[in-house]
Length: 362
Image (tube, rainbow, N blue to C red):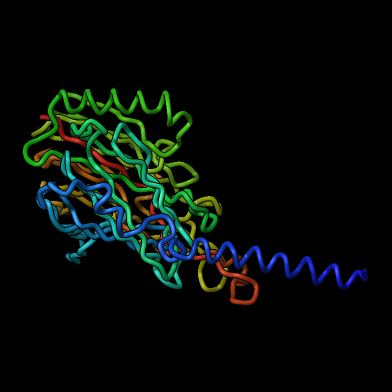
């Protein structure tokens, strides 16, 4: 038999196998990673609506935009310039025992396939769901355990589990489980630290995404977070999770060195193809209130005079939690010597890594 005949046979065989795969998997093709039935499967039918937060996730390079409504939570982020956004960046807010009922989209033209990955953390479900451009994906996360009890209140990382570009490891967020009223109790904090340590010594060994927990007691705690050449506070993305006492007067000191290398997204490229340190970004402390509203408490502008020095923020700890640092993404473009274009390739996206959370114990 001629060589060309064998080539046609093998080509036809490959096409046949592909057709078989398409036909047998067609019902799942358009809901890769999570179907709409996950709602009824993972949320018990007798669950009160007050325990379900309808959550919409928009994924793009390299950030998650999250909009929440229900269960006493309405996402609202107030920026220092007065702009009010109806969503968070790389953050979810939930009360203990509630469900995040997630509908997820990849923003067309602004990302490749992404993945919503939330490890167990002693919670009932692991979320590992593809987010494919042009498709709608679904997932549920429960702030509770398999036995039905509430998960320990605290800050838990979620991340993009799918490579979608060189900065994908910076696409990390936190689920902030806060009390429905009041502050974190000492037992809450102990449970959170204990469960986090247990997770890191078992299923999350070597996990680089869950930040260290630093407890700073007293009526005048001083908190330090120092960035490195990779734009990470204390070698962690997000930065460390601090625990302070309610009604204390806290001082937060943040140090960001002038960026000088391509490992740091703060060293952004201009249209002419030369890198320059970013300026004009708000760095600050923001209160996270029980209803999900986030408001600025203290802030400064990142510029040539605030690089290479400790930016100091003082605030009264009267909210249940805070987020600190640069809590909204900046647009980064890699454009070495002006060579970036459609022909040679482009690399751009929204980035944030210099941020973290503060829990208030009372």
